[in-house]
Image (cartoon, protein in one colour):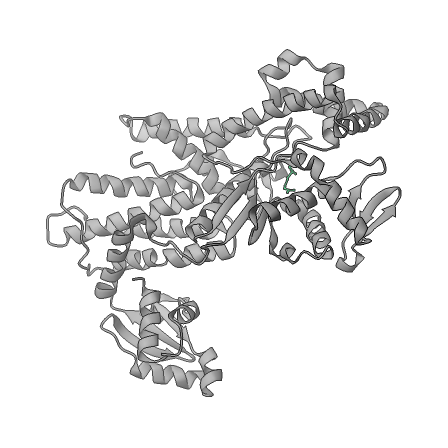
Length: 562
Ligand code: ARG
């Protein structure tokens, strides 16, 4: 059992039989400073029910509570602080991890609940941007964490395959496009056409009008235009899928914006019926002065629908299709207002489930302090970045371990992992700086550092050879207890990462865990034929379980050798 569960159990059986262990468990805290104790139980809540000062309750509890697993119980103000006996508690914790294996840290509170994640969602005929990379990586990690908490997850790639820009692209292709070139290099070539359209339109405003007309044709189902659009879409999707397979990300659905083309009339009708639509400069809008938001555009004066209209239709569809308990939109923070508008419209329509929709925003990727934008040519092509990272990892590995078998596969896991970890280690709202050298060092707070620590643990276990089953009978030294205390936090860390939709909580935890293991490893000879060797190796194995599972939750691989 983990320490928190042990304490919750002791509190209930010794003092608070009316309480549920779960409620007690949720109250237990980890003190800021470890000299205060391993865990603390705050008595504020009890003060109200028992009508006593919390500090007095803490004193009484400290005097009565005892367990062979506790080395000291002390009241500090309104808290009861518990110090565990390293030897005995350590045995509980490590044995628990070895017994559970990959299931260590699994929760059940999400069972029978469904989370829908709108993630990645790149725009076809445009390069896959670093922003879409962030959405993919953050969304994938949140989905895996949700799964670990028991939720059923649905990852939806809401491809940007509809909108006025396709009118522009079609016009550009017809004027300047070469089918062979598009076939050879679809994303880059279509992007060139798209940029050319904007350059030309600066001198010739009539192009914009032509673009709008072409999009109208597309919306009306014109055969020739639809054919072109479909071709652009297939080519783009194929290119995106190479990236997803490198990243190791899969989706349950690729229903993008165009899928909702025939499902928007319902939204417009509902809005009309409830008298929520107003005309503004020829367009149909929903006013939301009450929410202090700009009006939400539903239909343009020429009848064309908008981004928000499609998101509304998609929300209705998803609620029917998945009966979700939560719907997360992992999209950059520049779209905050858009999502507020969409949710606000749904609430106006009387859908309470709109309260379970959440925009999960994130910051920008910066290059030399500036935004990496697609318009200005400062764009960095993700596929190139991934290959570059893999190449650098390969060179690193060649130096460190020239005889490694399957070096390319390992380099791929390390190179891709470096990019994923670099994204996830910071609070997602922070902007991040793009620096491959930084991402790929084997020291400091990087993906390769965690992977390297894992591989090192595995190599120790390999070196130890056949030892029979590993059992943990307790270790006396202070460093091992630090490692064990770190390992016992894993279940709580997972719960916290889910509650805050923050993979960074797990990334930071992995850095701490790897550091504490490396401190232990630096001080202690693990393989030494004495009567504690088996326990040391058992601890190494437990560390490996936690690092491996932690990396998996972030969407990374853990090579056993590198
Ligand atoms: N394709 C959009 C873009 O690149 C992102 C879509 C986000 N999801 C959504 N449901 N609106 O800006």
